[in-house]
Structures are given as structure tokens and as C-alpha cells.
Length: 299
Image (cartoon, rainbow, N blue to C red):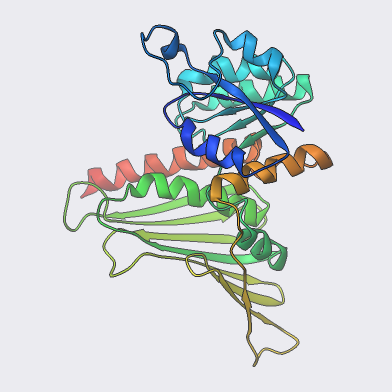
């Protein structure tokens, strides 16, 4: 049984529900500096009066908000040798991530960064089938209100995990047909092992879609993340495609991520999405953002 606490009330409710799905976690309470100055405090769970109190009561800490305002508390939790789950680090600076990495190595604890796809059975099966990918194409279609830049960061992190290599070169094309913000983004990533990754994202499609097509040394795998289907073709029978249906997990997406985090702790495995992977994604996205600004200046 792992005692777990949450930092950040704003997005705590989904995590409380997710922890309730996992019998191996014991929820101890929430710490949020804002609760200490409000006259009314939420009922139904324990409110820690200081972050130190939470650290004394818990083995693991969940930071429920992707906000670098909590970065000092993340570092403090790592110094207390607590295992940490961070909802996301897209709003963190690279220097802050490097500090977390250094502290983690000194404390010999685990820091797991949340990701909507990397912890799913679908992606784990795709990664198993694509051990040496040569070329990967990702296609995403979303509605008109979607932030494409945020989607690109998520996709780059997933590509880095799939490719098992670092980015060598970046090329970006940005199109705006209906508004001043990007309506379509196309990214090409050349990796230092010779592999190539292409990401195509647009926000004006008839229906939402998310596919990943990976060409390997001896096979091709295409995953439809929205339907949970993988089509696999290998060199032994290229005329026959094998259709794999990945059964949906009974757990919610957040519970699935927390359960993966728990399994890593219990088995002393590396986290599925580590700080190192997020630093590589951050550096790649900085180059992507620079290319996007150049494109906008040109057009």
C-alpha cells in the first residue's frame, strides 16, 4: 500500500477519482497554498496545513497541475526522496527540468511525467511491434477550437519514445487558412540514428482522428488510437495484414497512468515517460517554435 497525496486543488478531482480505482493507493489528502487563506475549505478529504506535513505522511506525491509555479514544491518532494508523478511539464523551463533531473539522481527516486498516450496498452503494443522504426508518420485531426501547438508537443514526446533516439534536424510548415492561429502544422524530425518522423496536425476535419504509421526494418504497423486497432504486416507474409484489437482498459486514463506509475515503483523499472524524454521533447519543440516564427514572418 502506497500513501499518496495531491498538490493542487484545481485539477485534483479527477486524480481523487483515479486513486479510488486503485486499491494499492491510500489517499492521504491535499495540499494547496490557496486553501490556507480561504475562509471556506472543501470537505470530504484531509487538507494539509503545510507541504512538510504532506511529505511526512506520504510515500508518493501527485502534482495535478501542469504549472511551473509548483516547481519549487516538486524539487522539495524529490529532496524528501518521495516518488513524484507530475501531470505535465509543458509550462516548465528547460533549466527547471534539468534541476529536477539532477535532484532525482541524487535522491534515487522516481519522477514520472503524465502523458495521454504513452501509458496506454495501445501505445505499449505499438512500441513492442516497432523496435527499430525507420519512418513514422503521425496524423491528427481535431475540431476548430483545438490548440495545435500543445498537440504537437504531446506528439513529439510520443515520437521520441517510439524512435528511441534524439532529434538531429527539424523542419516545420505552418498554414493558416481561416484564422491568425495555425490551422495546420506539418513537422519533420530527422533523428540521429537515421530515422525520420513526420507529424501532420490540422483542426478542420469532418471527424476526430489520430493514426500512427511506422515502417520498420521488416514490418509495417499502423495504429488508430481513436478506435484501438493496430494493423500489422511483416515480411514473412506481406500479402496478409494482421488486425489487432487492443481491448480498452477498465481503468480511466488517469487511473491507467497512475497504475503504470505504481508498477514502475513496485518493479523498480524506469518510468514510461521520464524527465529525460521531456527534456528532449522540450528542446525539439523550442526549435519547432523558432521555425514557426520564421514561417509566420515570411507569410
